[in-house]
Length: 309
Image 1 (cartoon, rainbow, N blue to C red):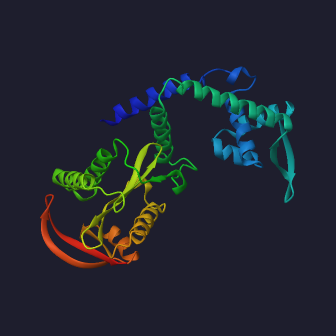
Image 2 (cartoon, rainbow, N blue to C red; image 1 turned 180 degrees about the horizontal axis):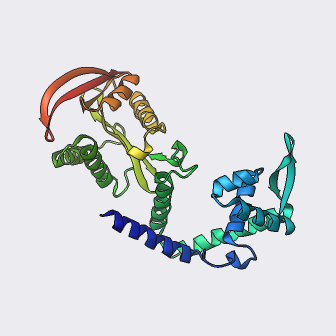
Image 3 (cartoon, rainbow, N blue to C red; image 1 turned 180 degrees about the vertical axis):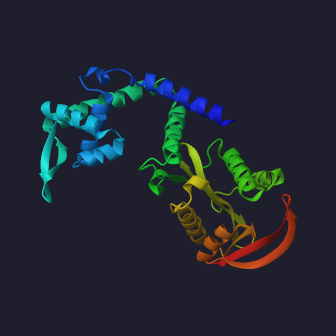
């Protein structure tokens, strides 16, 4: 896709969404206030105590334009000015009781508007829209858009579609990050098939991390002979790395191994997975073997790590 096509798609969405929300109307929600005036009130309400400079920096609007808006809002009894203790020439802004009531009403109307816009969509599609908008804010560097561990759910039940997502996520990420060809995806498919076919709920456990209906990461424990277990398919989607999700998944996997009284846990990886190897070592795994192999279009070393419990 060319840059002109990308720009065209974004502009088409902007035109659609501004019309969808009625943002081009002179007044918002049939009130006497414009969208910009309501946004100024929102900044004051959200920050509790802020200054004209803070609002100008947050909204990137002209100082003279903002000054006229603030005078209108003060005259309407929505905003109060309070001299700053350290500088009597400057003031911080708060909402009056009337201003807070107006913002509560605007918030309710805005919620209802979004609710009505999504009402005809099934829950999965609503989650897709919300996740896409979250991604949009994150990719464009919006303040407060960073992903946190609190936004991720970890479950132990396989749901329809999970197996396909695990295979697809491995295939795409290992191709992008290491250049592994489609034979690696086939390898993941075959090993997952074996896991499901021989699944024993007492001795096998999979941990699926998801956020807004999308798989964020996965790890599994598969029982082996002689009270051993294999740790498998440990992977974190790139945008969910660095928030502690890998540690959380490993914690659950190793806790399960100890609960089941496995004697040893092992895993197979390659010499290219240095970041994952560092995490394994923190959990007590030691490299026991390294064998040269030609795998998935590369000359690699297949490595075995073990952890005695």
